[in-house]
Every structure is written in structure tokens, then in C-alpha cells.
Amino acid sequence: MVVRAGLAILGLFHLANGVAMLLWPGAWAAAVVHLGAPDHLHLHFIADIAMAFLASGAGMLLAARRAASAVWAIAGAAWPALHALLHVKEWIQGGPPAATGDLINEGVGVILVGAAGVTLAWLRARKGDA
Image 1: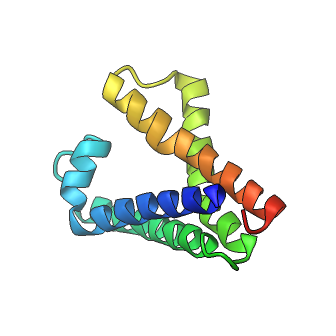
Image 2 (image 1 turned 60 degrees about the horizontal axis):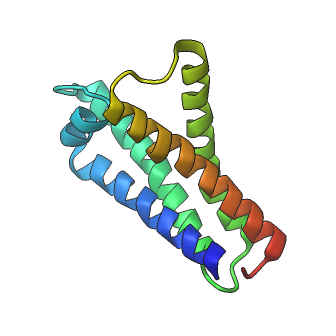
């Protein structure tokens, strides 16, 4: 039950992020990537990424159901995990962000959340209805 609750929480987190990106792309861009006034290309790119977060959130929520297949958890965890690996690579190559807020956003909101999704998907696959 703890694994399913964790998947539900992460699923809601990813859905909320995706919805925020779609509804308020300018505010999201300013807060997360410090992009002042996104142009059309940036707005399109933000919407593309939002769709990936919506799909991940939906997969994790589907995996949180009692009789759900672990495949949903794996599918839901894939994008956040790959996104986290990209940030880890950037930290290795260029160091972590200098600003504390960015360090927390990336460290917790991207890397830790991505790792948590992989862990929960692995537990769901291993234990079934956990």
C-alpha cells in the first residue's frame, strides 16, 4: 500500500506540473528556468514537455490502483528518470547550480523525484500489489 500511495503522490505531482506548464507557461518558465518572456518556440517546447509530465503522471496514477500492472509504473517513471539523468550529467560536467533555489529545485524536484519514481516502479514490479 505504501508503494501505491507513493506512486499516487508522484503521479499527482507530475500531473500538477504538466497542468501548470500548460496553463501558465510564462510563469512556469520564469520560476523554473528563469526565462523572462518566452517566445512562440519556447511556449511550444514547454507544452511538449508538459505532455510528457502529464503522461508520466497518468501512468503513475494508473499504477497506484490495486490490481494495476506494474507496466504503468515503469512507463510513468521513464520520462522523469531520463530527465533526472540529464540533470545528473549536467551536474557532473558543469557542477550543480550555484543558486540555492535552483539546487533544491533540481536536486529534489528533478533528481530525487526521478529516482523515487524508478524505485517505486521497481518495487511495484517486484512486489505486485504493494
